[in-house]
Length: 76
Image 1 (cartoon, one colour):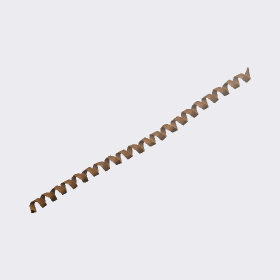
Image 2 (cartoon, helix red, strand yellow; image 1 turned 135 degrees about the vertical axis):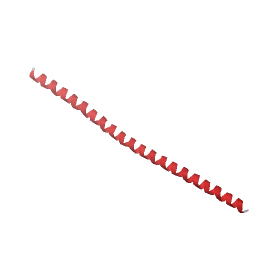
Image 3 (cartoon, one colour; image 1 turned 90 degrees about the vertical axis):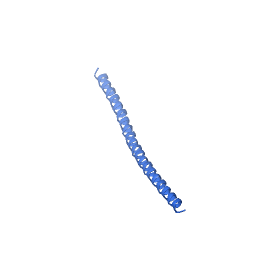
Image 4 (cartoon, one colour; image 1 turned 60 degrees about the vertical axis):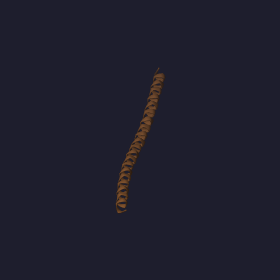
């Protein structure tokens, strides 16, 4: 009777240890995924800013071309 109780206790300890290790592994994986998600959000923000700068640059270039055309038209 004592041996079976001891065996059950040993099995319970092993099961608890396995579950604890699995829990640690999953928590580490969750943290890695959260960090990757945060990095992706930062990259998305940077890409949005770059897109805005490109659009502003194109608008400025267009305005500059129109201004040059207007100057040339007035001088002729």
